[in-house]
Length: 257
Image (cartoon, rainbow, N blue to C red; front, side, top):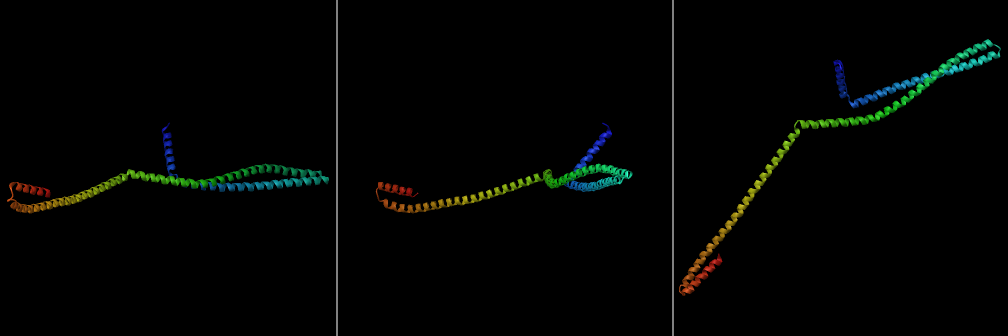
């Protein structure tokens, strides 16, 4: 393969690629419909022209047939009158019109076939245009949907490539950390409050115990006074009785503890 062939092929490929990228389906569909309608107008004009030509040929053919019949009658009249030469001349004129009508008949048959073909093509083109118009709206809708989806995918891709998604995730992690710190602070505050109440409860127990000890001490002092009086009374009793009395006093004190 020569260098120029490779360059030519590369240039053609690049041009085709540019054209393909530049083609907008919606615009191409609209332009195609316009071109088909222009073809339809031209075909209608061609059909009208063919029909007009057919009618002219038909008129010429009918006129030639009429002239041939007329010269036939004249030849018969001249022959009846005994003018054979005039009859021969009339038959020659008739032959000329017959020959002309034969040529016109051939043209008429050709024009009739052409008109029928043009009419058939006209009907087909009208049907294609109608179908194309129906498909055009559907294809335009599909093209718009595909374009919107492509743009959406591009946006998603750009968001991922620019790191926006990663930044969003970092902010989400930061919010979670803030919530965790807030929860920890609340738990610490609750623990401190619990410790204060525990101290209060503990202090109440100590106060109650202190009050009980005070009551015991006061009760012990009163008992000592009573014991002093009792000992003074018991001193006059025998020794065994004094021991018994002291033992009972100690039991009483133990019961009060």
